[in-house]
Image (cartoon, rainbow, N blue to C red):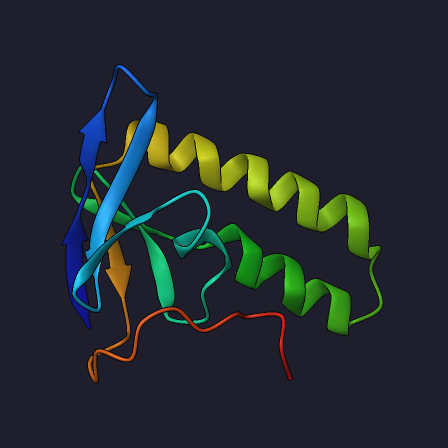
Length: 100
């Protein structure tokens, strides 16, 4: 597992990380990537809320509302955090967590 430090651009309200040789938006890519294990906030790593929401969906809970709440929570974690924990040790880059 690797740690990808945030690069913040406060003028455009944008947060990016270096992923597979390019800069990608944490909000658009990491939040929906199957390699994202969590957000580092202080000394703790908080698991990605989207993964938890998807596991709840597989158990029969409501899909839309849970995923929306998970995305909002992820955005809050990114606002307070400093890095993303990434399980992509091979360097393949973004892979959607919603594909089977």
